Length: 195
Image (cartoon, rainbow, N blue to C red; front, side, top):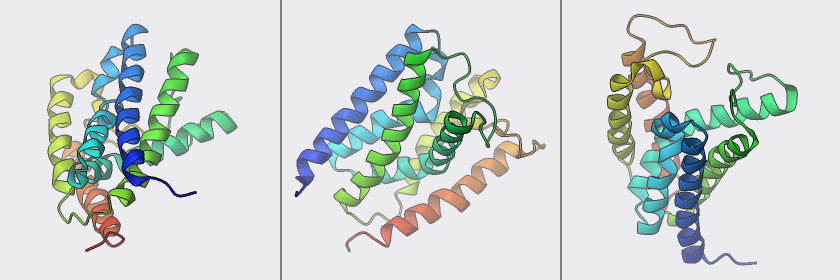
C-alpha cells in the first residue's frame, strides 16, 4: 500500500501538536504543570508546526536536539516497564497516575517515531539544521537558569547516576551534546537526503 506523503505529513503535524497539547493539559490538571518546560513536552508542538510547514530545518534541528535524550528515555522507560528497573536512573513515572504514565509514554515514543519517519518523507538536505536545535536549546537553558530547582532537561545537574556531577558540568554538557550528538546526527541524516 502506497503512503500519501503529503497527507501523512499533514496528519503527523496535527497529531503531534494535538498529542502534546493533551499531554500538557493532563500534566497541568494533575499538578505536573512545571513539566511544560521539559524538551520532550514542548518539542512535539514545534516539530508538528515544522511538519505542517515542510520546514526540514525546524524539524531536523529540534529532533537532533531531542534525539539522544528521547532515545535514552524510551529505552530506560521500556526497561523499567519490563524489568522493574530503569538502567539509566530512577523511576521515570514517579508520582504519576495511569493517565499521566500513558500520556508520557505515548508522547515520548510517538514523537520520536513520527519525527524520524517524517524527516525522510520531507527529504531535504539541510546542513545547518542543528543551528535551529541549538537556538531552541539555548531558550530552554534560559528557563533552566530561571528555575534551577527543577533542573530542566538535565542542564544544571546530571539526571542519571552514571554521569558524575562536576564544577563545569552545564557548559561541558551543552558543548558535548552539540558536538557529539546534534551535529553528527544532522550530518548523518543528510547523507540519506536528496541533493
